[in-house]
Image (cartoon, rainbow, N blue to C red; front, side, top):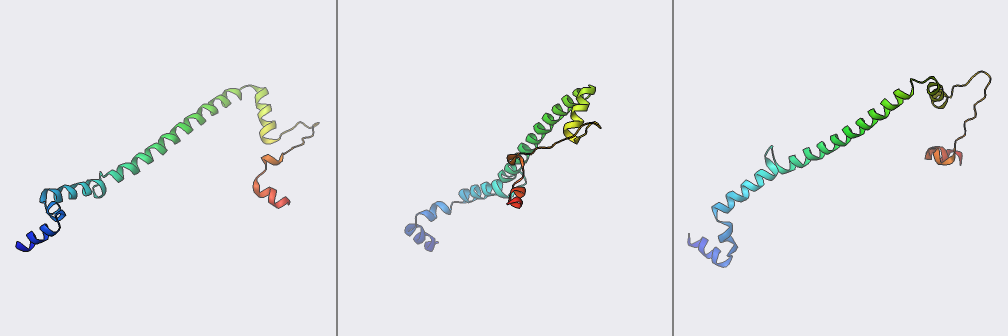
Length: 115
């Protein structure tokens, strides 16, 4: 015991670190932050995943709204014809179609191949 007193007199920080309540408190904090199933780190990962899922949900809800609007538009025969011409390049027998692509719209790989 006198050996411990000599050490605590020489290094006063050992007196604080040797306190059993402090040791239990540090152990508890480390356990709760890093080791437990409901740890802070696990909550951070779950919160990040939740945010990503909410963003995906919002994106898909917006896409559903767009698709619903497109479905309403495609009930009109004129809109069906317009959609078929734009999307699938359909034409009447007496027509010719010319597809014009601008350089900004081409992919970077296509630009390097043409050079």
